[in-house]
Image (tube, helix red, strand yellow):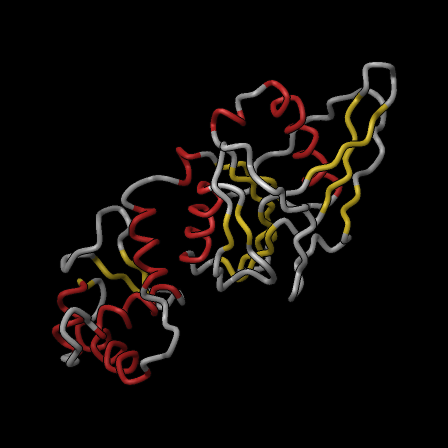
Length: 251
């Protein structure tokens, strides 16, 4: 999710500066969810609460598209943390009478990368992002974030989020995330990677690690996926995970 270019000013007059509440974009431990939870979602989406390990506070989702987007964020080792609906942006749009009216926007997620940059992300289905009402608002929201707050604003739809097999692979990565660490398996897999070198394959690493597992599980594979989640190795997400999946050296 690379930062996008800033849009040109949409009004000849100088617009008032936008503000966020809280002012730090809500990126802090225990970040509150500022959007009120609707009693129902008019049948257009499915609501729920995620167990998002990178979320700084509560993690409700208002649609399955939001849930899938956060799966990608959780599986991306470049993302350090994020907050869900953590602030309200008060921004301004020309009112057609020579002035500006204030509007409000609550983003789906605000992410911080391990390298430091912050990005505001909205997961929006194509049928919503193509509506004239959103297309009229979006440039002003983007301008407010990029010019007033120096953060990128990215809108992702299903063609960005539900790319396969990347999404399914990320779901597998998240399912294998340790609840209780297996330090022996991690050490043996790291030793195996040193022995076989890079690039290698899942099959070669699992064979070299030589770990015993309960039937139906593979401790070496789970350990390898946890190393990928931490950025120590990269796995090929362009094909469904398999014994021949390529493993590269990580960060």
